[in-house]
Image (cartoon, rainbow, N blue to C red; front, side):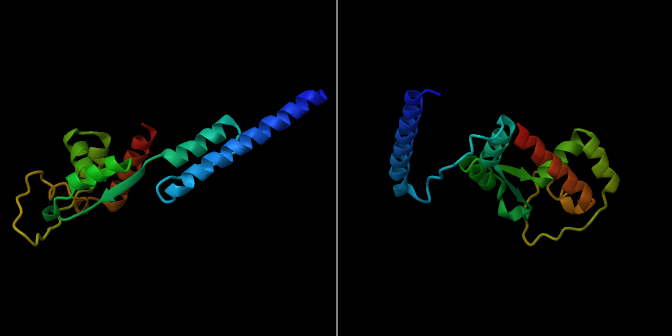
Length: 155
């Protein structure tokens, strides 16, 4: 490489570092509200993509609750606000059973009736008690939820 080109590269690197420092300084006032990601650009495209996907993939909220709490809407709104995935276990179970999917068949094969004691007189308008995860084999429910999370992350 000619000496002129090497000097020009050094100058561009110095200019780039100065710009980077100026940008970092601007965002220091937003500590706790802004995150700066540093990526190694010498890695393969696949590695870089994997790292970026990991940083920006939504987190998952999985909630099992008493019906009287009416938490589905609140969780869904929080998930939207914070770029998360909210999964209601009973809704996933209900969807698969009513849709007669392979998962629905697996769930029904393990279904056992279990009494659910409610502490309040709440109307069960969505049949949450019927599709509650407590009625099904825990491992089947967990496998279904893992697959659901994986499919939502890939979308």
